[in-house]
Length: 155
Image (tube, rainbow, N blue to C red; front, side, top):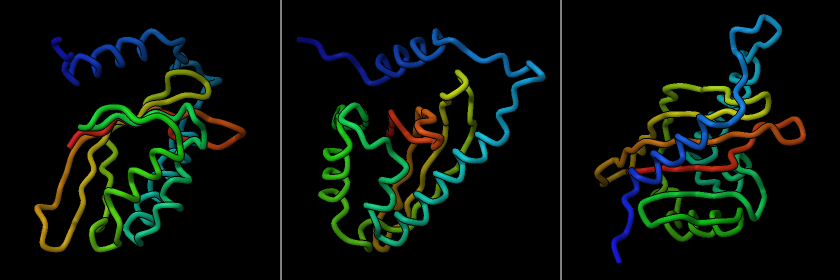
């Protein structure tokens, strides 16, 4: 059986995302500036928590739901608890976690309460190759807070 490549899934994801009802960002009644600032704030808090070795605090940026999805080099994981468990297993100490930096390339609104973020991450890890990679995050505004509902990271 031939497996489909991750780039195929990325293409399907972007096609699905582009078919969502979009917000006319040229509409003078719509301003995404404050929401974009709030999304960036979530990510800056994640950088800080990760760099302090605090996975529980880092995970506060994610939607605490069984429907949370995370795609990476090992495939897809579903559910907040499983994503946290994977992070704890893969990064058991602060030293292994290193210092996290996000380079946010773009924050794009796709609906009044949904946006995606394109970016690059870098880890500064003592005695390591300092891994880096790219991500696409889908955020939703849930109960007034922006949360990551889908994370696709490659590295």
